[in-house]
Image (cartoon, rainbow, N blue to C red):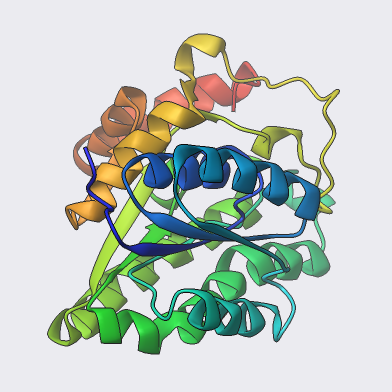
Length: 267
């Protein structure tokens, strides 16, 4: 299945997790990929895997929190490919901790990556997306629908992405640009092994039970299909779909579930 045949996708946060898996999935479906992330050695490894598939890949070291990095990556994309058909501002991480333990700086740092990093990417790629009548895939979270204890900063950032997607969908539609909101549940990635400074700690244990986790590869397959078909919202994982349904229609029940899971330190 070559849904992305002869297209160019621009992905941030592509060195691991969903971003890396999505880069490979799009290449398997016939697309070329531009990958932006801070860890160049990881990007280069994925480039080799994509080239082995028979597609082109461009790795651009960059930080979505720094003005100019994304613009330079877009300029390199224009020089290499001449176009962008899909944009996926995937770079993000989670700051956890009880509210009284967090500082204003923690909230600013969370928003700098998860919100302003997304905005930088959209502003930098907007004209090329309009030219190709392409599609923007925004990576939200179940926490963009349901706020949970100890994740106030992360939940706020993902609620913001939810609102951004809803607004941009109306603005971009007349321009021929699609907007797809991707809402992952628990995906097996490094996000729960990254501290509030954005540093990866491989020794940290993931508290989420394995039976609730979906692999990054399976999530990437669903995300690619949703973006290619321009689905309005795609919720990844069955437990995520159930949680969003309960939050919409039975908020009291959802609140009791969150309280119980929190007491067991599962969330």
